[in-house]
Image (cartoon, rainbow, N blue to C red; front, side, top):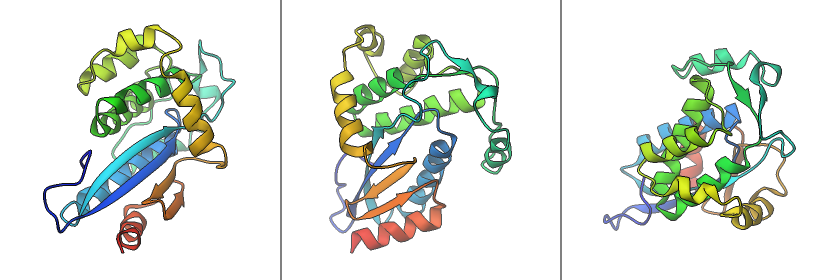
Length: 206
């Protein structure tokens, strides 16, 4: 995956816009499936992946609520199929701050934004981390090479206008996530398996 067209002029660029929430388990599964599809076709295409905010529960409290009261236990089986342990411990809550961080990450490179989505999802879903914990957000940003995250998040207005604009532009008319738009043509909803994504790449590239 790259931020721009690769050096191989024979490769076609696949642009993927994804509306997602950082506490959505299907979004994490969708990302894992997308990564598999990209890995299987990286010799054919260059990829530009951009994540856009979506809030499953905009009114969720910032201080967090017990995850077991909010999530379905059946997700454990889904996660095991991806070699992951689904962790229901910890809190869930408002995701606005994580979306502000995702916006900030994109300013330093779409690869870093994509890697940050993995880091946030892995911590939240498998390690019991809380998506509203500033320390967890900043540490995740550091792990993927994002600089200045703590300072950016300190001001609650940083990135707020941009996140709200993206929510309106990309997420206002959709009812579920993840939601993929490939080259502005192919639109897919849900955690699609890699083979479906691969077919969508082929259609979008023609």
